[in-house]
Length: 397
Image 1 (cartoon, rainbow, N blue to C red):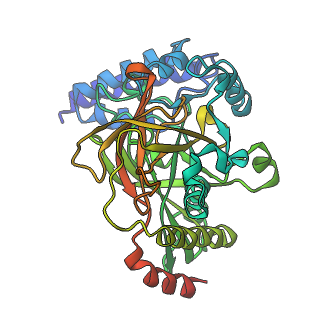
Image 2 (cartoon, rainbow, N blue to C red):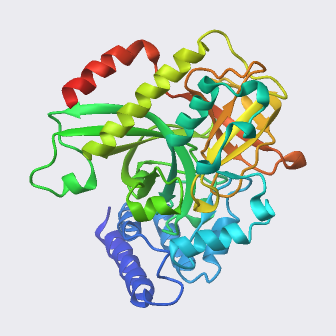
């Protein structure tokens, strides 16, 4: 780059600093900036790219937008993330729940602690099937994403709010857990410690790609486990881990895997027990053979609508679309709301069987006739490897 060009781009950066960051205390700027934006824009501008200059201008416009939160809520198409930013999280969640226009009153939502066998068809009131629903509900998580990446492509959810740190929430579930020894724990606490933990657990979360787009967003994502009711927050039952990176992402199928880490021994023990229970439940059900959901099959969704504690909804599969994923795309009548994006969709076949460990990912809501739709599927576990995992975990403990 020529010296003259360096001077020009440096002047642009300095002008951006003085005009934008001098007013960071203004009413509308408190919740819309992530400090990394400036550095990213500086790097792009210094490379001489027009894109960098455009980003600076875009961020400056975003900074002064008084309708920024409303814009983000409306910038996701039919996807169903909830958006916070106008007050404390608990108050925001209660307010959006009370003012919900999609499901006023939320009659179809069952608080997870109140879920009972009679919420399912009578023919499915077997201990094995109820145990599967319980386990999937236990591993369902809430995600609070604190940043919207500048790399979200045009036409993708929240593209027009790139660079903002207005929180959006979604749902997901624990896809896998992996014990680690003799390797530094990558969590943020250990990254800042001169003596990082060497024994820790990797937690892999399955969710929708539009909820957490890339590793940049993953690092600013809080994952809340066991948020079953309001008491869970106060009692300490709810555990929170931070994301560290995206292990896998598929924009076309709207799926991703988010990596987290913990060295909390009690949490590791509980996750292992849940995983062992999941393997046993699916084996007990004897559902390892061929399986396909059919139209009118029952499906169950566990999610965190409006960022609230876990809710269970029950409906029917209304349509099935062939895909190249692990499972076909499903359309269903089970209720969802903003905050349900990324939730596990658990379809059962006409006999009440569930494919071992497999759930579709809730992707969009409010399509024709008010139905909702999944993307693809992830598998919760691989039974043939479980003996190996058990040995690893025994050594881990």
